[in-house]
Image 1 (cartoon, rainbow, N blue to C red):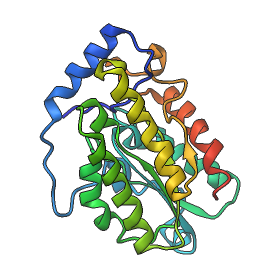
Image 2 (cartoon, rainbow, N blue to C red):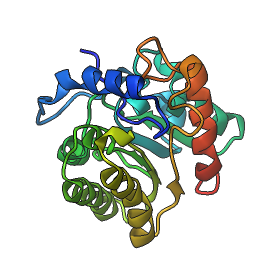
Image 3 (cartoon, rainbow, N blue to C red):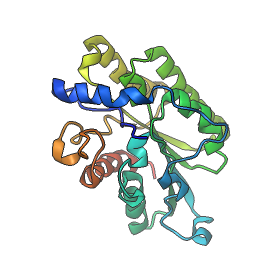
Length: 238
């Protein structure tokens, strides 16, 4: 099933926004499982080390939707894997795990977080909410779910460092909703004293050559730009 990444720049054209809305309409009733599967990249664990070496390393876990999962690409082309390669090249001693799941909402993320946290996590990058915004979900629920995920991580692993990735939604949802949605991330980052990636798709959303033919999911080149955006914040956390 094809599921969009749910976040685009507010400067998208009306025709692109319409296509985005239509492309998302078939995925509103995503089934949740007690032990839901991760994306292909998560199943592969996206570790850039052998199992033996990884045991002695700390873990960076990317938790998000199809943007994190690298929809339409080889797992090695998704931005979490690119971050992992950079970490290895710098000898920083971290294993990277991609726990992205296409179609994920904040409610879905809240449901599966305990399962994902069965493995130790030292750095947790949270990228969720775009699907909520695209579906016009009550922003109070989105905020509460994101906060619940943050709280669960901190309860399970008090020393874990959490990085929050900011998202945006297209303006066809209404100016007030768009502004309030964007503000959630800064507010949560301030409230929880978290490093914030202002907008994960900066320089990628709405740029045709950086997205797949569907006009929604980033290409390999787009993911390289996303990786650079993430690194600007993440490098100071590692």
